[in-house]
Length: 202
Image (cartoon, rainbow, N blue to C red; front, top):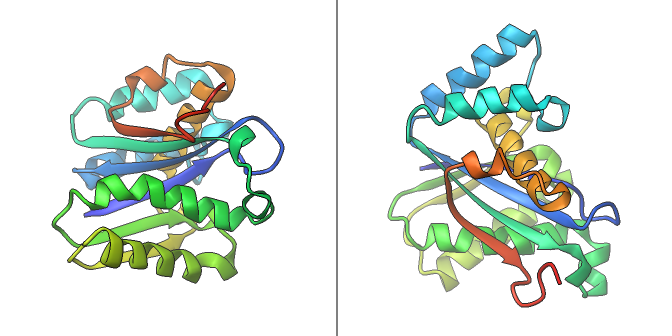
């Protein structure tokens, strides 16, 4: 099983909500071809959600929804309630913690080897190994996961599926930060997490 991950927003002071989105494709080639054809038609190297107009985003999502062969999961953090000074200062530590919460309900339901592909811009180069170790420790010793789990980092220009995850993350980000719900409601969302649950949005 392959899972594709990207984030939208930042863990600094801009905007209130930060999103990590995960795309779980069941037909990778079909989804890859949607991105490939869009890029060729537009004369671009990659899909970047922040650079696409609404009709372009909608066109891609309509094609994505032509078959029920993907689901989306995400975690959205209300940065107002990330109260730990260390978490606010160390962006990678915060990303790792949120990413762990996103993965847990997915990993605990799987009985297959898992390969997680993350946009390399989501974490600093020096923090990639710490994220891998952190997730493996959680999976093997706390979640009782018995299969292989691997996390790799890739430049989004090299992965059409990561580009789709970028678009999805951007749509979810717009839902929470700018109340743009139309495209969000079109997504095949499997599960979502609002962090922290008790105070989120208040």
